[in-house]
Image 1 (cartoon, helix red, strand yellow):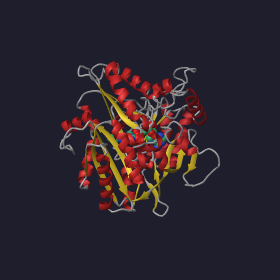
Image 2 (cartoon, protein in one colour):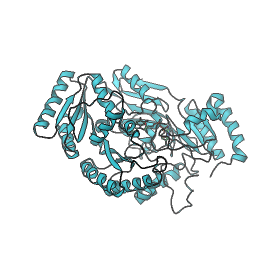
Image 3 (cartoon, helix red, strand yellow):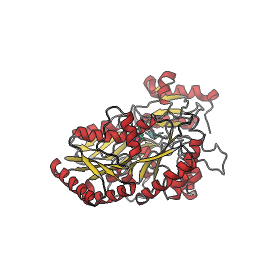
Image 4 (cartoon, protein in one colour):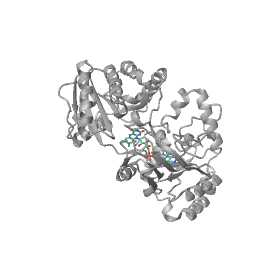
Length: 491
Ligand SMILES: Cc1cc2nc3c(=O)[nH]c(=O)nc-3n(C[C@H](O)[C@H](O)[C@H](O)COP(=O)(O)OP(=O)(O)OC[C@H]3O[C@@H](n4cnc5c(N)ncnc54)[C@H](O)[C@@H]3O)c2cc1C
């Protein structure tokens, strides 16, 4: 069911403005424009208006109003998502629902080590508030200056500390959300044990705004760390990287927080295209690993000594070819900058298809060693690189276009065929076509093609039960049922 622009939009907009006031609703094209294109600039849509409610009560009334008028809703946080999940379609019939005005940390309890944040709280703001209380929130990612708590919950975001602390799902103790009919689900209270049936908050985590609007979240905090050791390691191959990961994991236990891999091609691109980037090691190494260990109890010198010993032993056994441990916070940041600049550096190399995929950690080397040459030989002139979160079995698998490719055209032609092939290979390996970025509009077709039919029908049943009108983020995440009309789920 879609909203008829001609018959009802004026009444709807008038009622929405009466509810939210001037500050809470805009139809101004200039105000809307920055929020209608996704972060990567791949999708641009149109919207009836942008609503910015200031409270859960306003959000509830607004969603109820949308339900009455049949207006589709596209929830949006910081718009830093990678799969076009927060971008409306081209119909112009949807309401963009920004949660950014709801940006209060309602409470931060240092004793319980919990913080209740409204959906629009920016990740970095929570980091700073936790630090002020000598605590920390153990999830971080490159978009932390924009990503909001509501978006992080709705995409079940990952980042660079998943190895030790898990994804957003592992941080969430409670959720408050507005359902499709405007009712408020109040599940904010953290209960260590609660066996009253389904854990409904889990349904909302990772649901990308298709089952409800997250208005607040209760998250766990951890004690601040006392020390950190960041190492950059040169390796002969990805198999050695996996063996080293196992070794460091065993020796450092819960102190191992990050294990990222960077192939030489990616490091070379960063060194060539990012100002002030410097190689941490001399000589060329086929693969590099960025390893981070932290401790809540040990001092800097003790932690560093332990990491040095583990790496020296591994070097003696031929597992690694060289290693450097950051001597200062600045050097640690420099190491991370090399890792975090890969996507930016690659842009200088021309178009690329980017795939956020996962396979079982044990099978990742096998996957990379088979998939890169398979794609490069099936699509001559392309170059495959895989980098990122080896410790989570999640790499960013990028295929760089042949030099002759026409930017803008290549992505929609050969690029699409490459992505389909990559997802086939991932599925054959028992993996996931989306490790941490979600499905959004970018992968909804591929999820429909490759998803397990039983899982897909369960997803559709949940969607139908919680959003029978199909008004919450239509066309995202939940693939249309091919047995129904093609646009039945994408109102
Ligand atoms: C430089 C950079 C690095 C990144 N690195 C990582 C990374 O390492 N790991 C990772 O997982 N992600 C990463 N991301 C992606 C992004 O930051 C996350 O997906 C983040 O969770 C999105 O939050 P957001 O507030 O910007 O959400 P948006 O982009 O606004 O929305 C994302 C999805 O959530 C829905 N949504 C947003 N808010 C709500 C709400 N309150 N209620 C219901 N639905 C809602 C939207 O409809 C959309 O489907 C990165 C992004 C950037 C720009």
